[in-house]
Length: 155
Image (cartoon, rainbow, N blue to C red; front, side):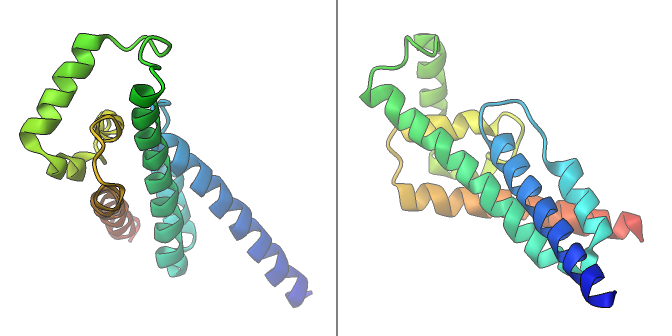
């Protein structure tokens, strides 16, 4: 009975981690979605799995941002600006802001509207290694702070 219960527990945790990965991935794209409640709930349910939960959420969120980056690159290279109906003046303003503040603005990619920055980074051809490094710091840092706060509040 104990072996079955352990196996069932691993299956449930595995399914929950897959769900968290997908939620974090989608939340990082331009689709309006949130992953924080699922992340916090998993931290409360399995605090001993904090590092694994943090890793899964962070990887999903960073990969979602990479999709935005690729979208930004593709929009320019394939001439998709008209298809996505993005006003040219809005994109130019975002690009000007990004150029003014530089790649360091990607450290704010964890903010609700930060996903637009990841698209602009792609349109401006930010080096991929630099993009991934800065977005990883931002996204992982946000989840780490949220996880620690969640554990403190859950007591």
